[in-house]
Length: 399
Image (cartoon, rainbow, N blue to C red; front, side, top):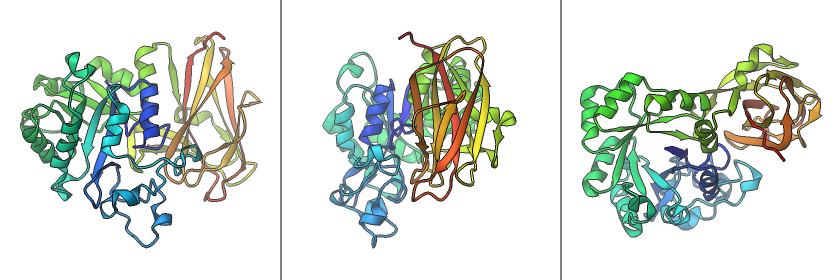
């Protein structure tokens, strides 16, 4: 099972219709999303407690600090742009309601619905139950023997338990269950939950066996292909990821290869400081064991290059995932001396990712050099950084 974390949040603004559609296009089996309630009791799909990171709330409502979701009505939230912070292509995306998201996804995937901080909103459990009741559990997923379209979860496990008591027929998951969780706690979880979410990229094989012996499925969290390829043979039941397409490829295309660019740091040549930086998840925290090679450019004219080798891999198509941030710069990327299209702007209002693909570029076997030249920066950027995350090398498609 491949669950898209807040949709395909590595390629589109999290928890928006754009991210959900992209997750479906990339082949996700499940879409994970977060729900909170508004001041007028509506369920909206949103992760953070406040609106600052992923909307323009501070501009639209400058006098409403601290901009908590629960302090705004749905009508007010409709006025916010929930996509422009990620990329100007997504400007105008709105905060969706849970009802709208269920209608959008339909029976194309299951939904893993995380109730955010239900301890601070005693009406949330009942509100989610009422919403799902309106939409039912039918359709092809249930008819094929699945336990329904929805899985309801929470980090606050007491409220996952309460949901199961309220709606025994709905699948429930307990989140952030760590490898060192004791047996007594696992046995309590197994009384109501069908899955645990570990929040970790890897989980000890003996703990996977222990958990599954209690009848619980195990979901790990990663955006690194090597992690999922390592864990799937150990019997985990699924992965929650920012990049569902990458995970689909990792599991279904044995010849696909990913190079974590930070692994190339020893041979990197640069006119400015370079460091290996743990990747940050969409909420600004460290996400799995992933990292990126961060080029701390100081201004136009700075350069950096990394060498990689595809010997023995045959002809390959190239994909490149970059990290964006408020300190991102504008960079001309080249491969083996040839420009890879126009300069790329890595400025983003908050932590974000972008994946570049070059379907008409075919790499021959052998040594290659990826080169970056700083050409400028966005008017709002505080720096000239470039985050090099992943090189994806897929078997070339004949054209």
